[in-house]
Length: 286
Image 1 (cartoon, helix red, strand yellow):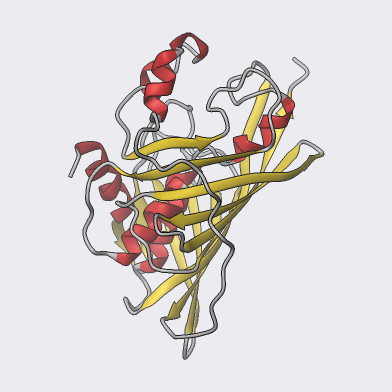
Image 2 (image 1 turned 90 degrees about the vertical axis):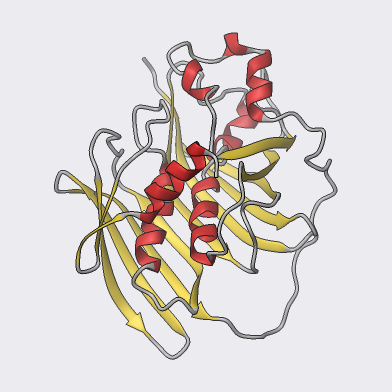
């Protein structure tokens, strides 16, 4: 396993700190705060470790309450809200320095057969032959903030290849994009790990889709961009070490907030997950 991916898997595994208590360290990705996907993945991992292995997470709903400090560990406290005949519910509160920074509710279910239908996967170029994000950024490094250039160009645990939409737009565009993604190395057959990693990756390039029609990006001076809430529904089995297509669209922005919805498809066209997020997209006056 690649070192950078192994480090992420270790971060998601967490350290036990007591009964239904866990401690997580953070990656410094150059933002100055904890990456939202990291807290999502760690909180889901904490919840899953208190649930029987034959019950899989089918949905999670989370709120980002405060920015996380990358220099301090994150404490995850799990509340066992319900253990029913088919469903299990957990609540997770993440704290730093005595203050809650994040809250998650997750529901787990025994696998069962049922009625099936899904949206069709859009027709987009396959990942083979598409340039990756690092390659695209290397073509125009001057457009990256100098303070973050080195970290943005560093090796990552996920390979991401844009299939539609612009990585660094120079003007207004339709509010949609799609990216192929997968881990840079193979992973064990651990369903909970694959779902925690998809939760982690689902926050990448997500909220910024709401910026596309306005001709601005996260690096535009005086733009304040931050996640407020995040939801994921897991529909079908998948592996994050095989190509997945995250198709994203922003139906609305108003009041300093933007809404984004997404669909995650496997390579064979199966809809494996749905995503949504609302976030702060505020242009500061000074």
